[in-house]
Structure formats: structure tokens, C-alpha cells
Amino acid sequence: MKKLPILYKSKSECSGCSACFNICPAEAIAMQEDSEGFEYPVIDDNKCIRCYKCIGVCTK
Image 1 (tube, rainbow, N blue to C red):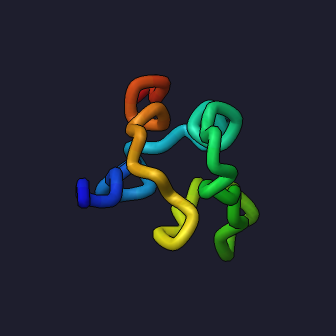
Image 2: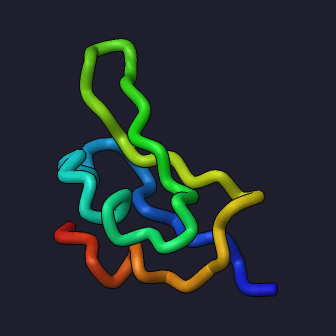
């Protein structure tokens, strides 16, 4: 099985635009709020089908 995609290594690499969340065909990405009120994507490894569409749409 392919490895789980890594959307970012640190939060500073993510703008929180939710493009990855919106493109995920398996609804495996949730936008979760951090302690400062910003939302970041989190992948549910049980739902992820490893299609990597989230990586392709990322605007990093």
C-alpha cells in the first residue's frame, strides 16, 4: 500500500485554503482548528485511498 500523503511538515507551509479538503474523493481530510483558531487539514488514514489528489492541488 502507498504511504499516506504528507500535506505539510510544519503549519507554516499550509495556508489553510482547504483545496485538499475539497478535492478529496474519499472525504478523508478534515479541517481542524488549532489553538489559535486557524484551520489546517488532517488526514484520516483509515479513509484515505492514497490517490494523492490532495498533493496535486496544494498551492504551497
